[in-house]
Length: 246
Image (cartoon, rainbow, N blue to C red; front, side, top):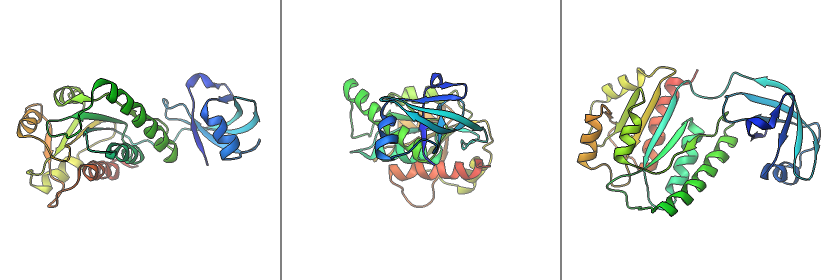
């Protein structure tokens, strides 16, 4: 079943109105007809609104609500991925897969060893692109919300932002003791906010790790192998998904 996102104001009782680019996609790409069922989410309340297509206008798809599915697909905890800016277009893959795996927010972080340096204008343009990828991934994976891609933060800003979260993890290549890592993951509980810090290709600088430790962020190991930056985040989110999935 195809899923689309609308603004809350577009859900008007039993009448749901789809506008924008989705109109062309539904009518001319998917070639859907009146009577067919689609799923709609407002990206906020976690509900899935099942509705039937009633009619098309030049710029709208008018639907009628059939029922609301409230046993949502979202994880019981919010996972916040603090991702060191990677090279090339790796961030696009990272956003896409993090959203598919259940992350609720992706925070790009400019770290000392990041090769990529974005000025304010480029960062804003990249964020628009990344947010579009987040929306597409949310549709594909039938998420009930569109995860936010935040503006690029400095490492200091990221650490400060993470202070509001219940569990804070930082995979580090010099960390050891897999049993400790398993214990930390196993202790995660529904309703918690979880911060995951991932370094760029060159890893974290020692002073960044020191700042993280001083802020109470727990170092963990991902095993004996060194993972690429785009693999490390997926690994941790997958572990957390396994722990939290109901």
